[in-house]
Length: 127
Image (cartoon, rainbow, N blue to C red; front, side, top):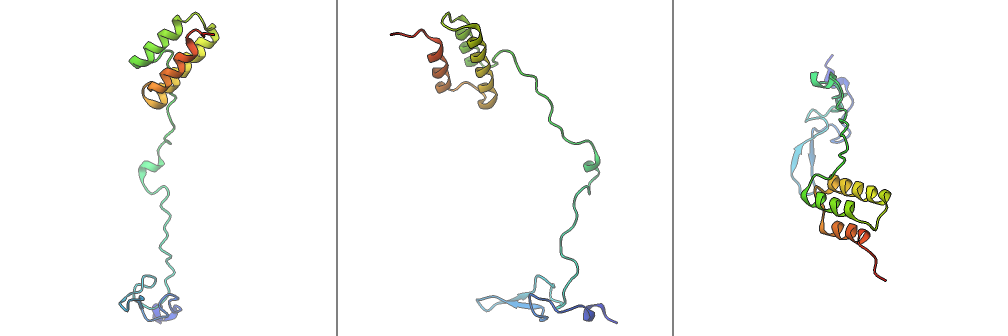
């Protein structure tokens, strides 16, 4: 008994093994690969954990220690201005310095807009 004849006809090509597009050109049926019979193999394979490296420990992100002081030149300069300010309370100074550190962490450096924003909060208010 031949296995290909026992299988039902391909739904895509109707058993012909060829398909025709709207321009009139013929091509081998992608579903049955030209046999005209339906495949049990759907083409999907379980690719999880196929490499030896997949069985190792997971890639857990390392905990990055937060810095206590800005690392860029602009950040250090701005933090020194905040630290020297007499208009801010110590809690506000600590919050602004932490904002500088966080901004450096996300942007890589202190942008001019951010520097202006912080300096506006630090300088004395004129009425």
